[in-house]
Length: 502
Ligand SMILES: *[C@@H]1O[C@H](CO)[C@@H](O)[C@H](O)[C@H]1NC(C)=O
Ligand SMILES: *[C@@H]1O[C@H](CO)[C@@H](O)[C@H](O)[C@H]1NC(C)=O
Ligand SMILES: *[C@@H]1O[C@H](CO)[C@@H](O)[C@H](O)[C@H]1NC(C)=O
Ligand SMILES: *[C@@H]1O[C@H](CO)[C@@H](O)[C@H](O)[C@H]1NC(C)=O
Ligand SMILES: *[C@@H]1O[C@H](CO)[C@@H](O)[C@H](O)[C@H]1NC(C)=O
Ligand SMILES: *[C@@H]1O[C@H](CO)[C@@H](O)[C@H](O)[C@H]1NC(C)=O
Ligand SMILES: *[C@@H]1O[C@H](CO)[C@@H](O)[C@H](O)[C@H]1NC(C)=O
Image (cartoon, rainbow, N blue to C red; front, side, top):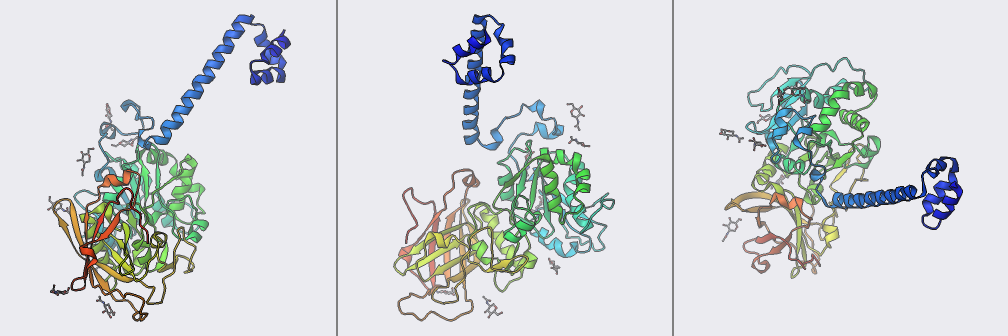
């Protein structure tokens, strides 16, 4: 009977036929069911498969087009990991929802605290610098409150005890049980955060889901040695409340297992891996594992909001002839006017003079006395070396060499003045910097005889980053005229059909 049934089904369904022949003995259990009931079962199974198919297709479609924070919106009462206070609060993420944890040490904090002063607003920024012991020097102008790390000395280690201590910052920050914390953001004492952009970036994600957010090293050698999937600590590591809650339960055991690891960020990565959470990359977190002059990198920043800069102590000053702190003050003053636009690049041409113009808003402008394609202009000039070996690469992005030929080299301009225009716009003025190297003497080249460039722009709506991205365009004003060494450029949205073509 069982065999007969199978052969009859052969006409209708291949898969069930195979099932029947594979294990006739198991199938025989079904075969005692009267014929008609068996057919009904078949119909049910088919219907079930169809429902599953439709459901999984619609889920896949939904997932592909929905924002991550809309996946499985949890009813309020299921937020079990979250403390009561946070559950009630479902408004948009703001700076008060972030708890910063800065890895510091008592001996160096008095020097390094100068970096935190650049970005820490004592009225709104929450968090602590975590020190190994009470600092001997405590200046009144140290804005960041400190905590002394506890319980880290009992852990075994191979390279450094402070790596364990700093890895535990997320755990110790969580244990403070402060209300309304959605994100734990760890950084080094020489990390500068651009908090408005950080808030916007984190606001895309649901803190009640487990997220581990950050960026890799720019030097491939560092990613090979540590990991490509790790958030490098100096660039900043953002951990959602849900992940921090999970980490807090297992971190001490985990730290004991990875005692042989080198850094604190590697330990956090190892523990996050045990939970099974991957790295969510955000391109604005900059470890800056490079040596020399970061100029080329910041003059051609990728099309993402600037979130952090690190290793500024180890790099040339961003602005020539100025200290690094002074350089950053300048950059941050422009950022304060138009946070979403800081170091955003756009380019245009002066076709008449055959010049290419590249603007990194709030930082620098380059004018090349030749026509370069958009592909070249968006690629950073390699003004720096790799972190460990001081080599010319590889980096995790493409670079092009800086020419020493004065007929190929760009004229460089750096931010000099800036002002807000009304509530919605800005004017930034960039002043010529004479680098080394002589003048181009070729007669077929129009030398760049410009001293100052005035750039007008509308403020960039932070919502810009939540849409499909397109670089902005620029255009010369006044027909490209140069008055008293001064040129005027406007940054604007590109027109639908516009291209940046030589
Ligand atoms: C959480 O809420 C419950 C009742 O809703 C309350 O009894 C409890 O004390 C709250 N816990 C905290 C930590 O606020
Ligand atoms: C952040 O949002 C919360 C509500 O979600 C609000 O109570 C708080 O005042 C906001 N903080 C800032 C600095 O905007
Ligand atoms: C930090 O900044 C203060 C002024 O704000 C300056 O006097 C001091 O020398 C700086 N310290 C270091 C180590 O750069
Ligand atoms: C902090 O708040 C005080 C008082 O409201 C204000 O005077 C000060 O300018 C604020 N500081 C910053 C850095 O915003
Ligand atoms: C909730 O907050 C309290 C302190 O207010 C803290 O002791 C507790 O660990 C927190 N629990 C969770 C699950 O976050
Ligand atoms: C920068 O310093 C160099 C020498 O250190 C000097 O020749 C040059 O004029 C200075 N540039 C500016 C813009 O101050
Ligand atoms: C020309 O520019 C210089 C320096 O930027 C300025 O001092 C001078 O006043 C300008 N002259 C005119 C006529 O605008």
